[in-house]
Image (tube, rainbow, N blue to C red; front, side):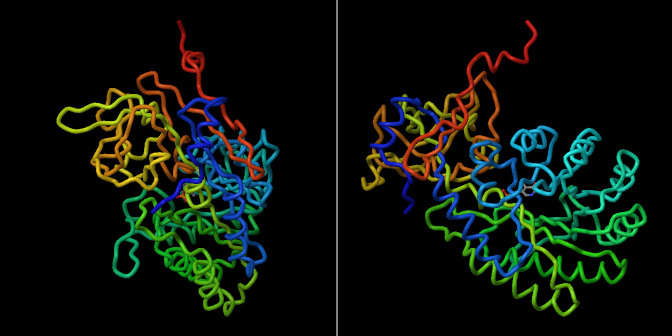
Length: 412
Ligand SMILES: *Cc1c(COP(=O)(O)O)cnc(C)c1O
């Protein structure tokens, strides 16, 4: 069973000021989760989480994470400019991009961000553009498939990211000849992985690689970036990641592989997005219509523009009808938005309590890759983002779009 962090009474109060639909985030839960992550990596003195900005590029959220000691992982010019506008610069920024335009490297260099090169060809691209910084990272792709306990989690061999091991060794040699003195290794092998073995397994691969690369090239490995990929339990029957066990697993690999190689000073970085925010945001909408044809439909004021994951990946997002939390799930509905696209469904054949027009529904786990993925198809406008603060207030973090926002780029 999944319980929303907001009640019907609270929503009825919020809508007096902020009409549905809106995304709502839970400040205290976000802070508690960052602290749990840091506690589990406290054994590593250099540990730092660089929040993947693309997951929730909202200043009010990024500020909370910054206050908790996180940096930002940026991947575009606008994400870099957002960090700059918030006064977050220098090695508080990890710039992990791919197919990178020149202007983005230039901005990252100007801000003093740590740059993570996605390809060996970018060594010369960056050198010719603005020179190589002293501290730099390279992204690794081991190819093949990535499996845990014989279960295939993802296929790095089909992924556009990173470089082969041979290229990585070559890249470090070249970077050293261009003056770099401190190096990082980065890899992202599987997305939304709730198995606790993911990070320890990835860490072991990267630690062994780091030892090998340092021995082959003499490059001083300063940090290893485990990137994103820790998943969250979107389904009520799923078990969430045991972050304490994950930290222990990484520590065990660290002590087994890095420490004996004399590399016990390597910092661990992470670039989590989903794990940091996913469960601590939800989308609140209201039932506008019910429709009974070959199936039973519930029509919301929210649509795929507010949350694209179900339409894009067929992703499951749990739905709670507020005020009916303990009612029997004795009806089956497709829960739809208003786009002229039949994939605009938050749920298909979902058992739910009997729904009435005017009911408020909570769509769970929209805190990461939720509002951020929004778009404007059908001239639909993206919703507001609100924060339930640690002291129980509700604060507007981003207003809802207006038609003027939609028209802003058009030439009439
Ligand atoms: C998307 C992304 C992340 C965050 O991924 P999550 O699945 O949200 O943890 C981290 N690093 C890079 C380079 C990414 O592209």
